Image 1: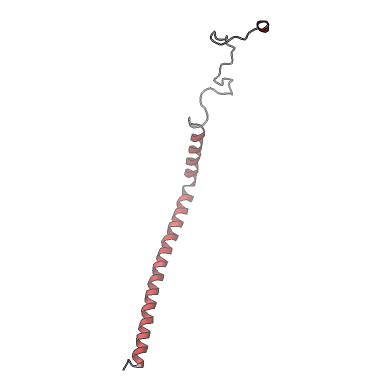
Image 2 (image 1 turned 30 degrees about the vertical axis):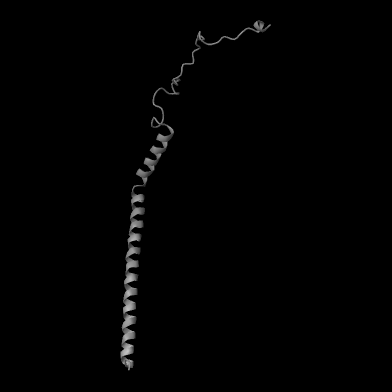
Length: 107
C-alpha cells in the first residue's frame, strides 16, 4: 500500500538534511564573496593611505599644468627686479596706422 511511517519520516529527515546542505553551501559562497569584497576595500584604502602624498602631488601637478601649460610659475624675468618682460618705452606710431583728422577738416 504505501510506505511505512518510519520510512516516511526517514525520507522527510533526509530531504530536510539535503535542503540544509544546499542552504549551507549558498551561505558559504556568500561568506567567501563578502570576505573578498572586504579584503579589496581594505587593500584599496591601505594603498591610498600609504601613497596619499604622491597622489596629492600628482593631482596638484595636473591641475597646475591644466591652468598654466608651461608647468607652473614663470621662470624668466621677475617682478622683484623690475623686469616683467614687457617694454613700456613709448614707440613712434607706425606709418600704416590711420591718423586722426583735425577738427577743422570736418568743417
